[in-house]
Figure (spheres, rainbow, N blue to C red):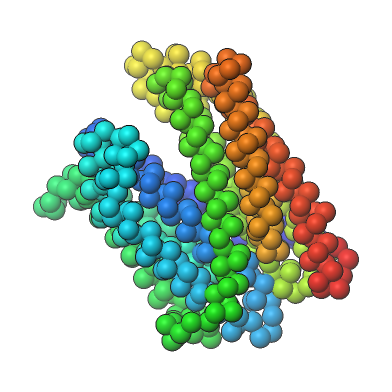
Length: 454
């Protein structure tokens, strides 16, 4: 395939995935806005409970994400239907097993939150939220597996439409149950939790129905209870490092927020807005990364090392182009972007924007590093290499990123800017090491296994 053909194929897969990630992001924003309209204290409790849920969910998501490269590779084999079925089923098994273990702390969260130093009333309300929302981890991780399965089979537009429908359903159920509209009971934070679980159940049921009708040859749910220990081990070996890598990355940003919080409410507000803006642009790179996983996984399944290498080149170039556009926006309109999140009449706005403008300059540097590292992870997952990337991430995110951010921010006195410089340094180390791993190690190893030279 030519480079233009690779670009078209990447964007055909990637654009719906990007849209799906943005729709998922919209669900979180909708929850925040609606609960903020209802009650500020309930919003704080939901944010706390939602953060706990997200940390647990992101750990378990590795098994669902592992299904993507395995199905992509198997789908290129003439007899791959059986392997597609095997790894997807065991992805569902592992996700269900993880959910069973995770339910214990999620449903009994109040003592844990109190031990973490949270205020008693805040811990009580957050635990009340999790006592309902926690059940959503079971269908939620099932959704992750089925979305990965469908994405690997290039049904990414279906994934987008399902996520958009989930976003609309979430907003509607929130409107009915948080506020008690149209005769429904006013449940506040419990209504938001019910909406979350309901949407996950509707999503997993809808995806399952589609799979049964669209891919009858896979017989995905026939004798689902039967174990397949070989496929189980394959998904587990690939999936647990992905889950831990995701957890390390989430922890990196959580720790940076905690450190900036030591500086006071205004720097933390500026930090939070800058993170929201960069999170939205990060989702573009994440969609490209998912598409790269699928494309490289399929090339690996065919033993097509030339096109696997070309997929990597095109993905990296596309990510750099988008990062360049985002950098231009961050440097030209930083005050405009910051002001979108602030009340024009807030007397603290000028101070927040002044700090935020400096952080947006850091966010510009951040774009190349953050986009590059997530794309590198996607390429490596496509060739089923996850353990060494986990080790690289562990060193880059924490000893480099967090430690340098602390030193620059506090002993050296650069404040929030110093913390962000630390984030950038950690991500730069990650992207350099991960790209080296893909081009100089993982790709040649894959080529030798298939008797080819990349």
